[in-house]
Image (cartoon, rainbow, N blue to C red; front, top):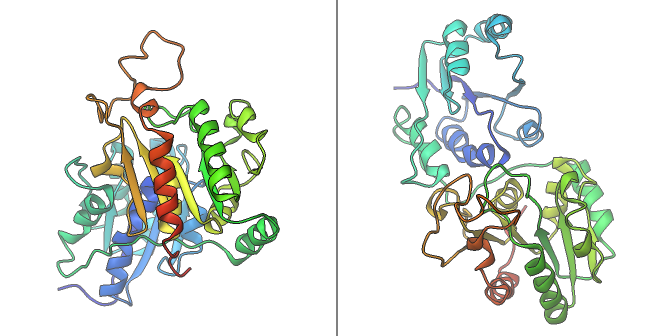
Length: 334
């Protein structure tokens, strides 16, 4: 049986949502073995959430160059000096496997992806093979700094509530079928304004700014598109009453912050990456081919249309009903 003084390295370098989905795994370990020391290796983008996490002792920030064979020996030496008892490799490519081998960590748990379970459960199963007495929480939790929270409160305090966040961008995603059409976002914004008379908060990357210009020009809109860091964006979402988004990092951030969240799903399978938590709902497209889980939509192969038919098939009225229902759900304590 495991010692209460275990020292563990977790590796996940992938997308924001993937890292958020791993949090229940190490939190379950920490709950079962409170004196266990947990280190986490990831890339710079998502490190901000882990650096504020009460269950993480140290965050190792790496980039693709650090994992090149010519440079990995230096990193491996640093890891070897830590004398880890166990590595939970949730990013099991050749480079991370080789790094673990060079680091001399005797025991490695290797993640095996399956679409039969939600990502949160899939990551958790990797650890449960060794830690037999773990319990999976039905909610995710992430932490943001007090400074980021205070800034967000100041920026939003004078806006009329309810604050309803739209993460309307994401067109640069390598996967089609994740982004809701702009015209329907505009229609939804008008419906929300007329029904709730609050403020719509727009989040998104700098690359979304030009595409979403028409949406930002509507009344009762406050846009933060391209104006915040990832942590600042999370802090703004944290102050909102509802989040609406396609399958994206900000959607899963909102879920982990306890903000009632509505996920719009076309090509992506809800059973794998749907919203996770009691305050969340996933709206699945009703078209026959959804979810196809393809990177490229077969109907857009020779088209300049940015939006897949599966996402366009989700009605604004259905989303509006979900928003109304979510506004009646109290947010989780932060």
